[in-house]
Amino acid sequence: MREDHDVMYLFYTATASHPLLGSLEHGTGFFGGNRRDKLPEEQFSRRALDAFFQCAATLFYVTTPENTEKLLQKVYHSDHASIPDICELSALASIGSHYKKDLIPDEAKAAYLYLASTGLHEAIGADHIQGMRIFICLSMSCIMDKSSSARLLIMPGLNLARAKMEADLRKATSNQSDEDEYRRTLQTLLFLEGWLSYSLGYQSCLKQSEIDLVHYTVPLDTSSINSAGLRTRLIQSQMTKLALLASQIQAKIPPLRDGSWSKADELSADLDKWYYSLPPDLQLATLAKQEEAVTSQQRYGIYLMHMLHVDMRLQLFCRLIKGFAAHREEQDLSSLETFYHQIPRQNLDDHKDFSIQLARIASLLRSVFDACVVLLLGVCLYYLEGRETNAVADMLRNLDLCLTVLEFCSRDDIAAMRLRNMLDPVVREFRLTRQASRVQQGHGHSMGVEYLLNDRPPEKPDLVRLTHRLLNFMTPARDVWV
Image (cartoon, rainbow, N blue to C red):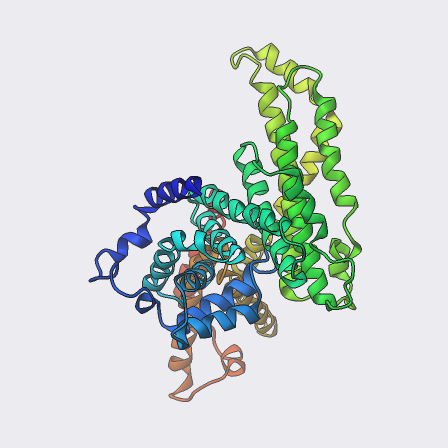
């Protein structure tokens, strides 16, 4: 296990300057004493764990809500919690806290990261599956923080998985439940390694015997699994197959020369096979059927799986283009012209269509934002012109609906949060203007929306100022997709 200890040393070095951990240094004595005493309050841990299962657990299997509840009770309400137990709880909460930025203080997030990352020695010596879970969660947390340490943490997790595999081979019998848990946890490790190797462009270290196990994470006998649980397993299994396929494609991309587009078509065909072999339950058409009992988390997972498929196609196309272009002289215009003409039209058109699909998905939030702007402009225009107020009431109802969508999405999505933050000051000013109008025109009486809408509108200078602020949002150069 010397390799794992070397990896941990690199991880500690890489995270030494992490801003969250840096904030702990100002606290008194945080890095000493009993680790359990450093745990945040139980209410914060519950929020973080709930967020983990609401947002991440459909895509990646780590553990079950039932096992996590037992772990939380053990850590907070017993004297039998081990260091790996505290480490596992903190690692799970570290991921969940990313989704609840407004409900979990920064000090708690820093504590989860510290407690999880300083228990790696114990994690390696823990139960194989528990150790795998800890390294999975820390790797995911690094990915969410855009840290280069993510791959370093997958390696010891894979080594623990391999050690368990070798130990099981020496046994005459094995526990079926433990075997299922092991395969599903290994599947998540394989997904992370496959996805990172393709995204970052390095050669995966996975063995074929490990890859083959992915085909057996959905049991042949599914009588003991309800339909919702089976669909979740299928999503997780297909996400992993897609990531591994992309990793294998990465290894097959040849040194590109003229005439290599036939090889490019072969690589793209591998992704076609994955797509056309998807079970009916995971097709996008399933989501349009009202009779299908698909949970919101599963719907989220299916959408992301298809987005990952489209994104992988675009990454492949970009790498092929870059590979071809690398053999050209940048200043040679005739050579560049020839290069463009050599790209097969059908190939270019197909990937253009994939780009449009992905852009349409990504633009949904922006469309909601634009709808808010246009509705507010419409209300201002109706007030300025003194037109009928029934239409204003309808626009305000639709505005509230759009704002609700943005508010909901902003809980987990940074782009939605920034769009909402752009609108908030204008919406507040608009509401204050209406309230001022009520006080001025209501003679001290509290008025409902109906009374306001049938009375005189807000003052024209206020409406003009609001209109100018809204028009500033309509510049095409504004970019909030960070």
